[in-house]
Length: 262
Image 1 (cartoon, rainbow, N blue to C red):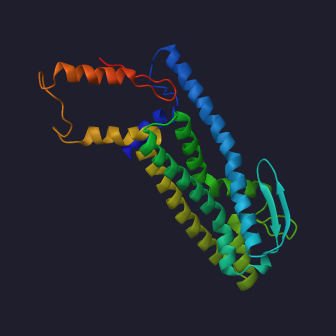
Image 2: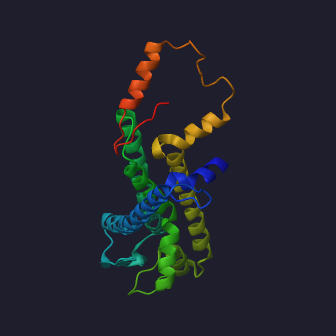
Image 3: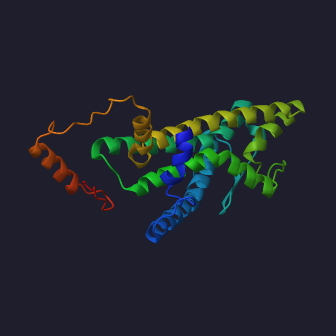
């Protein structure tokens, strides 16, 4: 975890304030930062509409009529008659949005793993794209709660949507005249979702982001002496050494990267 914390800014392509390098390096960092910000802004809408469209599909699947389904840049208004839902169906309504995002993120990680096995390397843009999706998947419940709190969707009204964080509260309040159990269940569900999405994101960062560079660095730093074989002089023939150098110099990445042999 300490290594991940130290390497995370460079893995995300963020400029490091403590490093002093050529101006070209700073320009590259600024470009990387701009790309990440643009990706995060784009994935906000992808995350938002996946979340609420999955809820709409779920309501259609259980034959619950939707009175209002309207898209906005910051939220989606979905109004339905919650009294028609049983407790297990209201639980599923709270979970279906974040679970859909986790399923999409997990599918992207599997695709990334498959492409890595087949092609060996992929453009760095794909790594940043999956990273942005994973970050918003982790933050989705918090983002939905913050927007609902600002818009006043935590208060029950038959004409306005009720936020995900308040659905179970009002459901149990309508049944038992007390929504405390709904709040406790909601907190438990959100904790499970956070653990699930955080685990998927951590596995991706450790093993697949930037071709698993973080895991490679960790293994090299913690390996015992002699684990990685370094040949002594004359243990490699000049022909084999020349072949290795030429092969390294001929390698090209998707973005035109080259390997420098010294």
